[in-house]
Image (cartoon, rainbow, N blue to C red; front, top):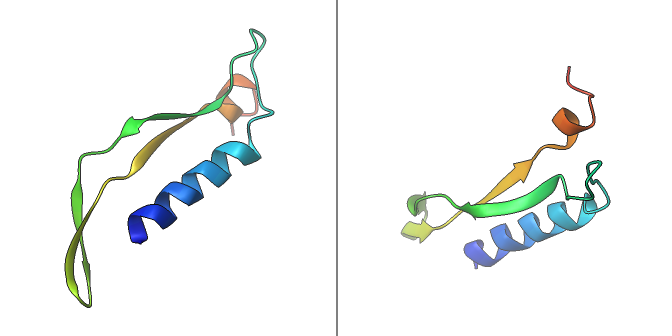
Length: 66
């Protein structure tokens, strides 16, 4: 269940910023593989999860770096 929630959150984030594209029309926020599996300790014991990597180049490509 936790894995599904994490994936849904990533999908929502990517959908929210899908309109951001660079001068070549490439999206600035995309999925970029997964992190190595890790164990998350919850009340019922450890749960193995995989976290999706997100490449967010929005600020960098748009010249809005702080």
